[in-house]
Image (cartoon, rainbow, N blue to C red):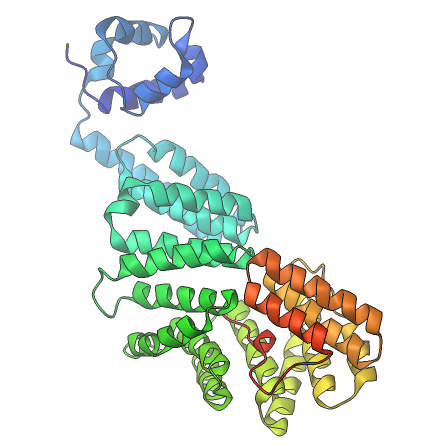
Length: 425
């Protein structure tokens, strides 16, 4: 009898799991577990003797394991998996992320090697999303890398782009800027194959522009800003257009155009005001306020500062309190009140879990500025050195260099843009 793969391997896997056997149990003394795995995944066609041995251990026949799956069987299997996927989505909507995780892991296990590529991909994608919500960056990254290696991902530019964009954002937030830039570049390259108007094209460009600003490639960021704004112009109002204008604002400020930057941030604020993205809205508000305190008119900066205080009263997390303390420190420094700046800086919690490595370095820098303004020279020096080390560890080498220069000069040198005031989406 001819053994057809992957049907044979799939039935071996199903029969083994139904009996609660491991691959080692099925392997016995004459096979290796790795060989059983290759057979189950359709990557090895066993000879007649090995096939009979496997069938006997499973209490069945080679003929039964080799039977061709009928279309109706495959459809029923697909409907069952889709039903479980819908249940996992319901758990996500209810905010029960632990239940969603268990359900999605089950769908992935059942769909793996079962000729259900599309369902498997969707389940793995949602599994990565849930791991992100559960704040498990290591498993989140591992899930995304598995997706990136999936043949379906590699064959579909849209899917390839989605995974590369998510990886770029995750690695950038984890303080691995060089890796973030690399995956953002991959996403931009892949989306070049898509027709204009696809949101993935703009998402990839936002990821690359943001990573370029953070890593210190400011000339490149300026070059990317104009095409990005053109890319998102036809898209509906919402988070993506707001993020694009926000990213472009950072590039404009660093190119020496603070008025344009503040105008773009105001437009982004209007676009995002009615969306459900609470985290993104809060981060944009911080970005706009900090830049206004650094380079905007005093009355506008004070108004935004008051809004920031109101928002912080509604979100009482350690990260939110630390960000408010940073903004209060910047405001006090602008108003020439070193005592107030030092008081607010003392409330900055550098251990707040919500702070990314890059943001932690930025918060350290503002605390060091407050120490220096208050005359605490030793504390200021330690703070500048710690901020520079944090930037260097994240791969933000230009920000680290600017920090060392500020420490050496005893103050910010020149009248140019303050790169530490730029918070990207």
